[in-house]
Image 1 (cartoon, rainbow, N blue to C red):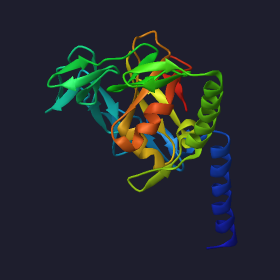
Image 2 (cartoon, rainbow, N blue to C red):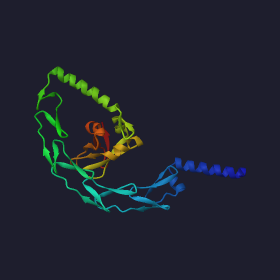
Image 3 (tube, helix red, strand yellow):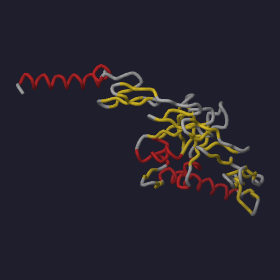
Image 4 (cartoon, helix red, strand yellow):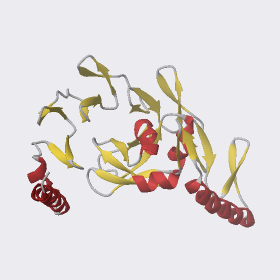
Length: 253
């Protein structure tokens, strides 16, 4: 290649770098409709798939939402061919993926949720109960602590919260802490009662797959994090969702 040819090649590369730096990549990459720039190329938006040099809309049935180049049924529905079929959900339960889970204070009994006993000064926790702060378990009831016991309990709670945030969780060859979940994940609320967990970083893919947010009502700005698998129980216990807009929210642990 001649010196002039080399100079022209260098100038073209510099021009591309400048355009990318100033957000003018569309002019260089010829980004089609329903896509977005990704590095030196482009990716179709959810609900579309790449077809040559354009993005073609995919079929998304009722009660489903686009997920990459495919679709997923909303909680409370299961995939049946090319549609989403509603599943049975008993009273005092909520949809969880293609199945259902009893609300706190109830336990599964066949195809229904049976209420459990919760004494005074206690709160339901899954299929059991725990005493409120300032009380201690004594048989099937909660007795008030002494002043010194309460102070010691508060110190232990503060220490445990600090430990929990940095404690490593290992699952499916991935390692992360609650602090990672808090910093790198957020909630995308796709319906009145449910939101999916979106995270940055491959180590948190398992959290995206196995956890979701649940809101008790359309107006509720704070929700619980529900996960499948005992390994992710710390996320359920110590983390919650708080919406900062209609669709997006933070995870607080």
